[in-house]
Length: 143
Image (tube, rainbow, N blue to C red; front, side, top):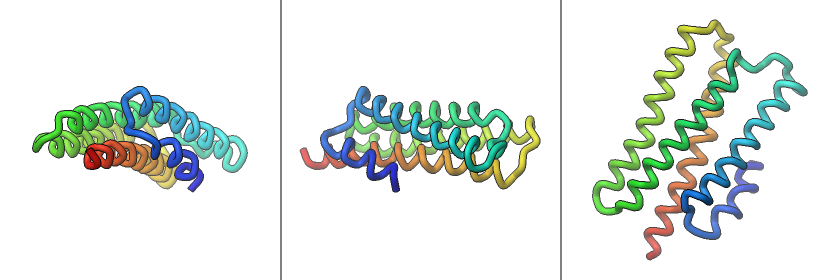
């Protein structure tokens, strides 16, 4: 709920260009990292899975790539835009699934911690990406 209250006023003003998205994405990433550090140090010491920051960085990077691909699709317009948009989101899903497979083959982790941490990061980044894409689509529909 805190994320929504913080980001909605920033995003509602105008269409998101790449520079504005990168600024919001950086703020969002720093907030998520601060939450992860505070949970690990204050509430549940040692709760983060091994190489948590690799997972964090990977999901952030893949989200950034998916947004850029989807944003290009929106700018192209016409019939291909929806295919490019869905392709970007599907690419993110497939890359994350492949990452989970490789990660679980390489590291022994507590399954509950891993599932909670991975899917919460995936959900937060996907929700942020989709919300930003919808802002661009709404702006496109108004013109």
